[in-house]
Structure formats: structure tokens, C-alpha cells
Image (cartoon, rainbow, N blue to C red; front, side, top):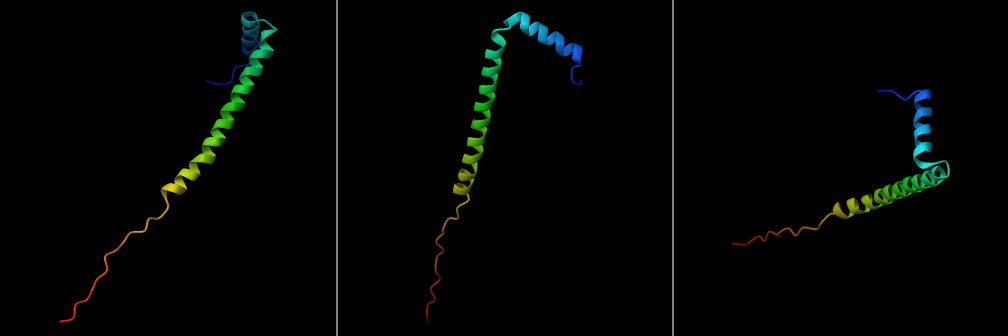
Length: 73
């Protein structure tokens, strides 16, 4: 399935104008744009938070090893 051609895009645009009216379209576009902006911001914050969590998980732990004591006979 490829990209819609120009006549198909015009039909879709005409249907949108009929459904929402010419005055509502800018408001819908503004809402869609702000939604996309918020989504990208949340994704960026999640990516910044994730490396911090990985660093916390990979911190080496100090394990105590039993010391061997030699006994003199």
C-alpha cells in the first residue's frame, strides 16, 4: 500500500472540512501539534532517565572474600 495520490488527498481534505468545518480545523491542528510536542518531550525525558537507571544497576558491588589463615603446625 503506497502513499495516497493527489485526488485521494483532496477527497480526504474535503471530508474533513465537511465534518469539522473550516473554523475548527486550525484548532484541531493546534491540538494535534501540541500533543505531538508533549509526546516527544516525554520520550526525551524517558531516554534521559533510562541511562541513569542503567548506571545505578551496573555499579559494582564489593564482595567480601573470606581470608585464608595459614596454621602453623
